[in-house]
Length: 349
Ligand code: NAD
Ligand code: TYD
Image (cartoon, rainbow, N blue to C red; front, top):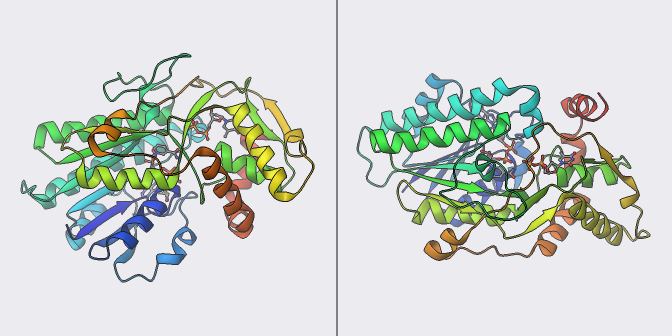
């Protein structure tokens, strides 16, 4: 395997995947294909941007001709597809943007791979990075398994479910060699402050309310982003053709408990009186169609590929908070401009 196109490599998870591959595989040529939406930021890759095996190409995956031209130019043996519109709340406001990038964009990439590989699939692989949200919501018990029926509720999860179906259809219909990963909620450095954890860290630092939707009893299964990148590396290289793998941390938290833990750690790190950050917690109007609980059964990737997360949640959260405390210029940069309009509409509109 010599050339790999990673889409969405300037985003949160993509930047960690790009770094993992650039540093671990000096013999691979890594091409980061990203259009740089509000969520894409080349500052996430400053430390590796001059490596000889790394190239950035600015392109929109909804532009089929441009995508094909890039595939013809770089002739990738592998594709790791992360580019997406990724925020549920934005999908409620503008579903079509999610259809365009997540569905049409994915099909454009599948077509480009099919065209340049011309039926010769030896050593080729298309890895589609997806989410546990395609499975819908769980009640108080149970876990998502790879064969759990799809039941998406938000425009975001519906668009990701659709893209997963197209990826499998290209495997069944054209024999395109694919693997899929469906991962739980990620957290870690470089996370855009529209998602719960970085939004709360940012708001504590700027002394703004910490908005908790509904009663705060909604439950998510959290995985450190670098552990997701490691899982992608493993499945990309060792996963079985046509298979999907659920990735998670067996680490469920109700939102309110998670935010209280975060507040406790931030107060400790800033040497402030306990309760200072938590006093900002504010219950706000619930998200429409809000899924109650996500939880992943990650036993397949563990048993078949030997995967285990490398950090506990306490360690990962502590590292994450430290990163934001030490990179407040990154936060200031991404939260200026468009973010201010988004924030006003979402939380004050
Ligand atoms: P993100 O929003 O931080 O980054 C998305 C990246 O895709 C950005 O760099 C953006 O510029 C790029 N992009 C968006 N539209 C594009 C387009 N039309 N053409 C080219 N590039 C485009 O997202 P993330 O949180 O890093 O998620 C990455 C992937 O992982 C997504 O496919 C998401 O569905 C999946 N996922 C995310 C989570 C999570 O907790 N964040 C969990 C499981 C799966
Ligand atoms: P989020 O980080 O948006 O991820 P997802 O919706 O993909 O799970 O939200 C995580 C949980 O936190 C979810 O139950 C919604 C909730 N939430 C809040 O309570 N307040 C907020 O301001 C945000 C952004 C999310």
